Length: 472
Image (cartoon, rainbow, N blue to C red; front, side, top):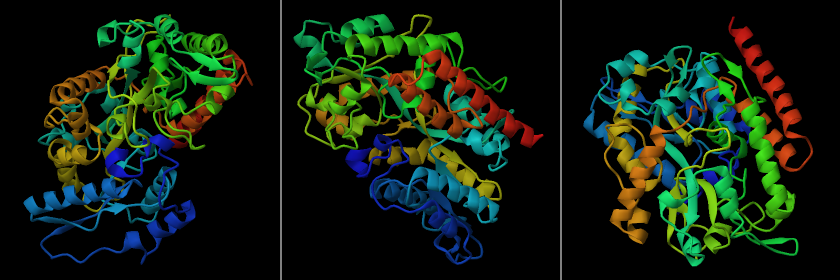
């Protein structure tokens, strides 16, 4: 991730990327203009298929490795060649709009990486369904993917994408801090319930007046807020969206209980003021927008929920004061029955109107099990296909040794298998934004959990029903 990428998309919610900025309107012009950058195809030999592949706006390292993988595939497949892989500038939402504009103009790429759910595009007939291609493939059959991850690519009985790599979530902890207090710091000894996590958190939380000097675990303080909410809901026996019945369940009792629990926790341990917490440091593993360094790496935070990408970024922003980090399962809520995990998507898809769907799917199949190794070597996103090679993160091998790196990759594999269904709504973007507002209003005491979740439920369900009505 950022150690290799330079500009880390995860740290800024993947929509506020560092680097070259471009407006949405500018990207639309690039996508649809007949002589624009994205519409200008390279000449090819008549007996070759010329493929176009797009990736979201990442750093130079991220873009460069995509070029390398495409070149490797073309070298072994003389029937195809690639135009330069387009790593679009701007923010992720601009990229999404550029895709829609290119499809509408009849000039889409053949394939692409998306940092979102294929469901939202598939529901609008903006992607090619790939079930038949998967069935005939070497690596991409249904059974080769973790069920919970593949669900984010499926809508109305059709599959619209491949979950090629995922950023998996876990509970990161500073094992040295636990040991200093005589607390067992092996994974199996970590809290199994929210109550246990809350109790342990108090051991590390220290206030200096209105400044939070050190913290244990801060609830609902992940980098992506609402995008991580389905994990916490599932941990409490709930869910936010029922894909099978196409119904939101945001204001269900387990979710109200969840938010009441977190508000009570902040009241008890964090002076009831999330603003004081935020002004006292960055609690997400990365330097925040105000320039505050990550408290976890400073040794001021015992535990946090973070993604697997932090393996590559652990020493990116500051020199950590410790190296003995580890990762454990998510604890279970008062109404929950089992631990689950979740993920951030890096999915492959074919836009509607693509000129060469069969040829590009061959590349997607290759990427799933072969090309993904080079991807992982540059960017620490977890390969998810069963045929993908066993890979180890270089930064972890160098800092912690090969045995620990192998063990932690086994842990991430287990998290992929227990991933809760998420990223599976056709109005996912709308719901993420609306739920982000709800979380903020609840944490800042602007609205009571039950009232706020009921309002979000009404609006998200209305947006979903509007889309379904448009589909007939």
